[in-house]
Length: 416
Image (cartoon, rainbow, N blue to C red; front, side, top):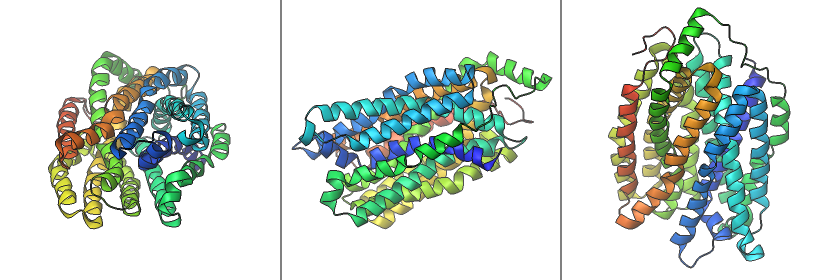
């Protein structure tokens, strides 16, 4: 697989998550722009609710674009999803505020979030299938990990852009229009990456029909319902943990009272840890198998999540925020890439793009899309800054039980 091909797949994946994460990071400013209110909490909750709306259309995009990836090929599906991403990110960036066009502003905001969710819902299935199918023998774990690595690279880029804007622009300017620059920066990659994607070779029909390949597909067909159900829980609970890490930037500002410049560093740290540890997760899973590599760090996260939030709530300092972010990020990012690879391997090749896209989109829409809103709402209702930690811990327990029941999928290892 050529480096240019990896870049072409990674660019679309990164852009989609960059957009979602930038929206999350600037949720307070977006709330002021499109949902002004005398109560800051109401404005923020409205913005977070629209952030969640983007997840509603993900299953629709997963069905339409994911199935397109199985019928027409991985490449056409990736071209459609990427073009829609570029249109929606630019559209949101140039939408006037509520003060300028009234109710049309929040309506357009919702429309562009729905379109972005539709595109991203159809992006993950074809791109992950492509990476797994194009991987050299014995390197599926590493290539599958590139899916999450590009997501975390987008977190890093979003954090760097946000940090730069927070330090270059006055808070009032950043609140009014500076946040729009972050979206437009991401859009600059659209024309070039779209052109590169047109040169991708197709992988859908390239696998040889060997006896082993047919047996593997028959096994997956026989267990597809179980695989989908367990995959839904694994990806869904992982999404709660992942979006909790993204939420730390908002949590730092809204609950801990830290400045935006400090909060943005947490996003940078999360992205940096992902870029470092996502590929390590894939390498380890190729050597030791999928189950051990995804389960051990997940248990470690259960151990550290409550102390991490206790430290942040008690000290309310940049150092406490960064240490907690590192501890939680490393655990999550050693687990998630291998989990996604295992689920992808367990699905039959002929329906892999659509099935993975649908399972992933349903999981993210159900668990990930509501995570930040639920954590903020729990904090408001309980007046307890540790409320998000208990929510994350409950998700980890459910996810671990699903991982325990999931079969080993690494080539050459037993399928339990």
